[in-house]
Length: 145
Image (cartoon, rainbow, N blue to C red; front, side, top):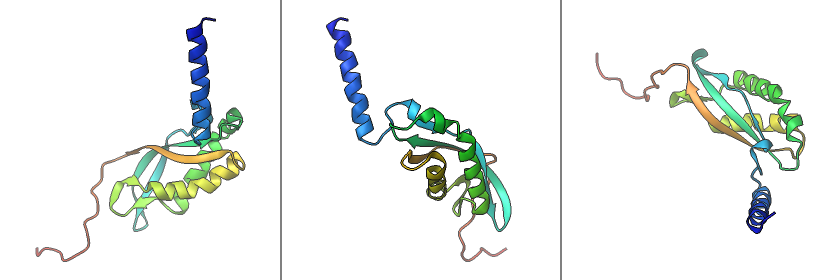
């Protein structure tokens, strides 16, 4: 092995260990990408839209990611159940979901499913509304008709 190849391998090993030390996944292998899920947007007890959400679970570098990745259907099931119990509806936008509510609801389930210390973060990768719907108007005096 020539010196340049040895140097490149050494630097990539150092970079991987630095990423792991920062708490970020060392590689794409330490992620669980959930298949897109349609979550309801509920206003006044009625479904007004669905938002297709793609979510990723970041895993600790020391976890057997293949075993956790096999549990992907359980993560999706937990997400759908949580969204139907308490929809992640944004009061100001019916074309998106509330990411903070989603993360707060999915985090304890991710820890339960993946095991203690396995899950490091829940990340909302993308959102796409099924239909573009009008956002609610702010409450206040209505113009005369």
